[in-house]
Image (cartoon, rainbow, N blue to C red):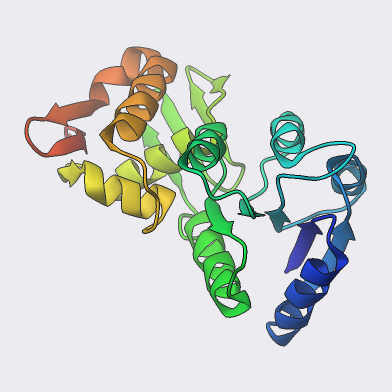
Length: 221
């Protein structure tokens, strides 16, 4: 597995590389967002470890540009631990957020958890003209591609894997955003609203379960 470390602190990059090598991960390094963008255009990267405060191009700007090019699992590793920064990162679609100082062992565990979420669903789901092909990372309706944010896509996959099961907002927060996310129910509700809008005529497949959360309801034929 190839890890791209985007951080302007050489010491941080070296620590991550040391522990990543113990997991047999191949590491690439960039000191800022501009360097990182150049790398991902020419290299296949499996996961990105991303700092926020960097010269030339900060982490949030980089991630916005990254999403226009590729969908790569991304973990923010930053000294900025304010709730605002975490909310902004998750709203953009990042997969996890850790604050410095950090535990390298925990970072490795989080990399594994993020990659497991990305690789745990390798099949094609079809319901009428709705098709979710996770191998191609593509959602289509009536053979037209639907563009989802990374978090919307993860939500849809999690719903599919748990179809016809009522899922609490807490379950969704823990599974999609991580156990240490400090957001609230509005985070889930906002993403559900956006996902429903993108699903168009299939928006009603996501049913609100009063006093619980949501359910992806499929009527079996």
